[in-house]
Length: 396
Image (cartoon, rainbow, N blue to C red):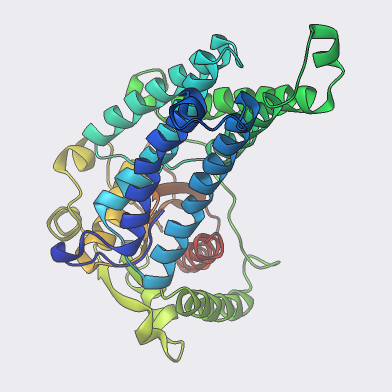
């Protein structure tokens, strides 16, 4: 939800967080309007059960729309709190689960779709807890985001559908709105299962499902380079252009950036500081060339360094998270790898690079295997780091 630098402790109740809390407080209002006999309580004979469903649908849409409002406020005011990061997704889950259970109570929706959705939420919550104990953040994929959108649309359709008079199954099956409601619900359920499988796949190492043979390497990306991998002049032009784009995007979004660099030794920060006006964006960088610096300044655990090594997904994520927290920025980029000509290890040849990107939503890592000499590997690392920052900033 929220973005930006961490506000002071006294400003926990930011406008974005207030909107989030209001969203949660409105959920009981939605449930009461939907399932309670409030027209009889107030002797309003003109409001039927169908009218109650329509009123509840309107309230549900308003609550759902405020999810955009708190996100906009957070971006506009450049505010982020741990409370907001915890409560914002929780508000969505509370609203969706309350609506689904209310529809089951009214016998508008069978229980099996609700069970699938609730089971997914419990499993994903458990995976996140395991990841948190290991200091790993599993970023949400587009499956999860679209899952929430389709669930909300399906709930609205079922609420509106219930306001129609459907005397029998034949009439129901020929009603376009009824059919559309189930089509959207099925899509939501498919996305629900896919997002759960995506979380399990990302956490397979944490859960002990991944079996790797000695020396095996993780899937790698080829990365971005100029048309001629030896054309350092072309890569230098790309680095300059993309550094300008990163600074421009960050300024537009009032965002700040930190760098944690190992094999590049400050080249990413150097590319950014070459851009006029970058002082409004780049807060600083940490050149963590040794494990001792990674541990002391970026809070990379000794267990990660001993068990996974400095050139690993876990280390890259910890470096990015550590840089973002220690320099108090919106985004952070980290790179750790083997530039050569020596330093290769089993499963980690020269050119192996792990990159971490920390954002307000979490941390992700990318794995590359670059070709060329030491200078070429370092240049390609800088180029792809800037591309990663461009993508992260453009996604907001």
